[in-house]
Image (tube, rainbow, N blue to C red; front, top):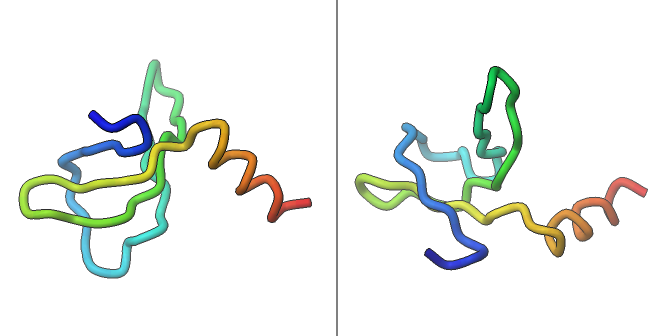
Length: 61
């Protein structure tokens, strides 16, 4: 697995690029990535890491 890329099998549709990818743990939901593309039986997203979080935070100043 590439450190900045996550894969998942949830159903997506055209136009969903940019939506958050959530992981639910103990009934709590965490945004762990941003959906970027679908490829047949799997989808790909950009993992939210410290670098991406800093970039996103810079837009909300």
